[in-house]
Image (cartoon, rainbow, N blue to C red; front, side, top):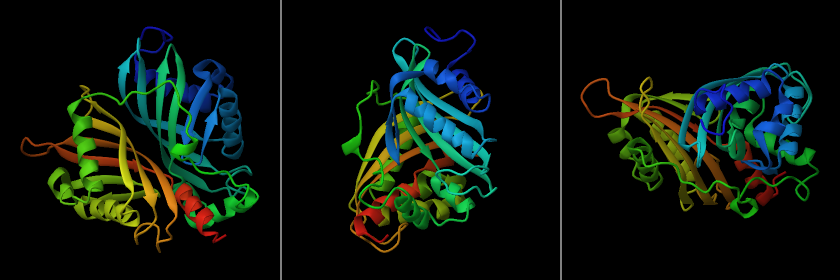
Length: 329
């Protein structure tokens, strides 16, 4: 781990360690050290520049959810300490809504939801990030429908003219990381699988997913088997049938104590022109930022298939784009 604090035994230990130190141990000031001054953080809701803005957002989140935990389920990574490393960090977060904030007046509701954060780090510092929280799961547990939450958020931001615009490539800021991941076979296999599905080859699901696959999907939904996988991917693609699917980043890993696994960052760009996951077609231009993880294996035979999949995108950011376009506020 050249250039990194010697107390971290490897890159996953660094990512897991600083996450706990910042959030749970209240080491918020360490963001001056661990995050670069000109860090770029992209999420479906916005783009944030600089560690000072990240510190402010972190404090606001902890004021609203003071008991928040961030349980690191996996770190799928590529690169080297000398050239920089990219981690795709999957987190299961628990929290209680004890303070007023972006989610409204405190409800006391207990939450559980997933996050995936892709972070580039070099010399003990993160300088580029793509972050998605499962906002659909969060707001549903608070009693909101995602579309109604997006509508209320627009109103609280002053209406359509002043509301913060969700992330699109047009407002992106170029950061220092321009890599595409690695060439490991599992990343290539998962990238090819999702690309085929987005190209309407739904037969790829029974061919390459295990019959007993477990799926963790946006909105906090858990599914099992080929039928649930087909319904999820079909309903997403059907809502944006002419949108352009782009695979931005892929990592594959073979680690001795874990199953073969892969991480992808991808997007859909186009019009809400079909019936599907987002209801009646509106013609709204929509950008969806997606992150997903997969694990492979075989219980019988020698042909590994996808056994577990974790997919995250922000439903509320999609609804916000639709509502801003249609004016149905």
